[in-house]
Image (cartoon, rainbow, N blue to C red; front, side, top):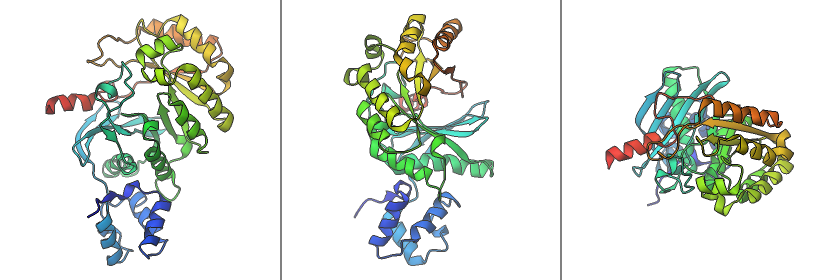
Length: 354
């Protein structure tokens, strides 16, 4: 017997094609889509404008999700971190953040991560598997269901694909996820309100440029030269800065869309004025379509070789970039009173369960 798939993992077209393959009407997909993402029901039996035969067929082939909530941490600033258990027992994190412009959800794309950044809690455990598109979509739905129950009139308006894992290492499922949450007849989260972050898989950045999506791109750069970047990010061995910047040039030429460069500031490692000048030089010919997001480091117990940069070092780095004509800002921290660093809550829970 075939394993049931999460219906959240199907794009609108895939769902339409499935109904046609079942000798049913194509418009059924529109009905189901409306029930899932507009009315946001949690069972097939609630889809009352479908006949019983259709509902039974859906139950036979699909589930409506498979995540269960293990832990929910709420911060004083309104940030909520969810720890979800997958059907196979693996744990993932999802975070809801409140901003002046709306509610943003940070989703996870993999169980663990193989990128191996030396400062990151996500990579403490190597990748077990990719998440399916359904498991990524369901993170949004779980958060939206929570809002429906608590606030009634609030909705997820923004998404950042910056949780555990490397999205471009799970490319196809990530792309399906983007198409599903962006679809106008469903959650209708605007493409320009969605940001995908990559550690720098150059070939996938080019592929993403060819998708012709309006989704924003962020690149975790964290160092302006190969020696330093390889030391803190092993991905730089496979995709050194020149190869990465070639992909960036291709993306900018193809899309004419701004790229955000993420830069975590590590005390006495990559936070000197010298590195700021090198970074400015690296981005000089792209500065009209570049923005540098400076991120104060959230210390991780297992990576005790790193500390948060001093406030003065952060300010000097920021001012140096500005003086060199680079658009930049310092990220406002969310959820600092809970397990704020990506992967921290999951890692802590897995230690307890060990």
